[in-house]
Length: 163
Image (cartoon, rainbow, N blue to C red; front, top):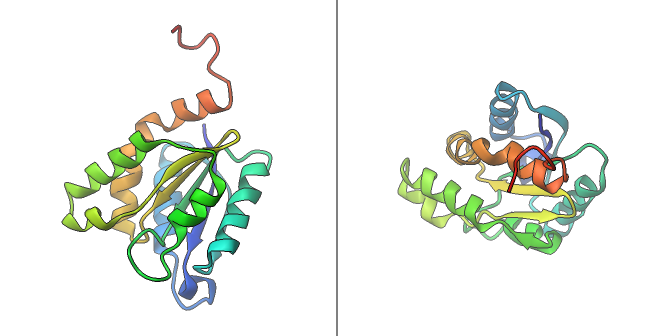
C-alpha cells in the first residue's frame, strides 16, 4: 500500500470556482488499487507556494508519493514542472516518458505536457495533467511500478527481491 497526497494546481479551484475533478480521479484510481490518501489540497498556480507545499509533503510522516494535477501545459500560469524542479533532488525520466507515451495513444495534445517525475528524500513526486482523462491515461501508465518504486525509496525492499 502506498500513502499519498494530492496537490492540485488551480487558480479557479483554489478560489472555489471550479470543482477538482482531476483530483477526484486520482483519489478514485488510487483507492481502487488499495492506496491510502493522506491529504489533499488545492493551491493557486503560484510557483513558490506550490514548491513550499511540495516540500511540506516530502517532510511529512506518512507521505510516500505526492501526486500533482494541473499546471503542466504551456500556459503562462502552468508552473507545476518548475515548482517540482525547485524541490526534487533528481528526476525519474522513465516514468514521465511512460506517461507521455501512454497519453499520446489517446491524444496528440500529450506532446505539450511538461510533466516531471522526481524524488526528494524518500518521497516520489508525480506531475499529472489537469484533466480527468489525462490523469487516467498518465496514472494508469505508472501504477504498475508505483509500489515497487516506493519500496525502493523507503528502503523496504531488502530481502524481497534478490538482485
